[in-house]
Image (spheres, rainbow, N blue to C red):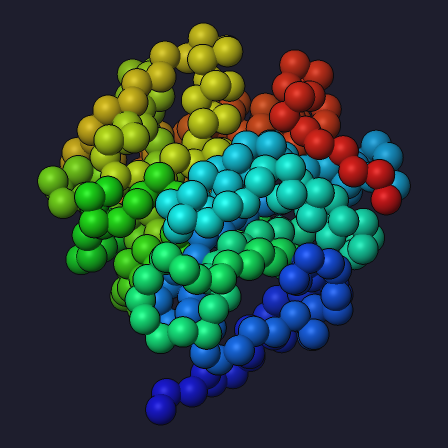
Length: 314
């Protein structure tokens, strides 16, 4: 049996002291599930990812970015598992979890709805489900200076085989294979193509390119995850009169694009500096403009988008 060598994940990640588990906040070390848990064996869960930061202008509050959209997507993901998870319940649990932990550094929250039954049959009917939240302290997930990527040998699943409109945990086996393949072959990140050979996304991020001043990103019919950061970038770009085109993207377009970058809750906006043997343009004016605006918004410094921010007083 292969065992992890070196630093363990518990040592790598600083977990928040309290988690939301079975309807209340409990010490993280007590939030445990059985080894027979259905979701552990069959990937029958759905998760979200949210960033929260201390308010730079008010030490006693925490800012959550687009909490309502995250709660709505998780509720919709739960429906794909035939589970009922109300948006209001998710938001209330997030508030209570943050207040219990009193964070003073940027954090990443992981809400997760899953089949908690101990049965062995792969099914979604007549089965118990539950919901939990835990968090970690998190700075930059990827280098803000840029990452190197390779095209993965693994193909992104199709929506007719997996419900890709949700963040279904079982779907991330492909992301895991692609990420490890990329890292073990000397790259930072993987780029996945769909079954039609079009650019889809990275292992856990959406992708954008810029060509002739236009912002281009794979459309939702290309088997992508409907990312919340992706949607936010599209809205910001349109608001500042940048043309946005959502369509199929060929892999060679990435190699000749003026700018290429990734987006996601963990990754935020991260430039791609190299794809396989091709070094990309280091001058990224449109990406820089979008990234600066997004930072302003998440730090509560942009009144035009203040409705995207939820402030939690500690």
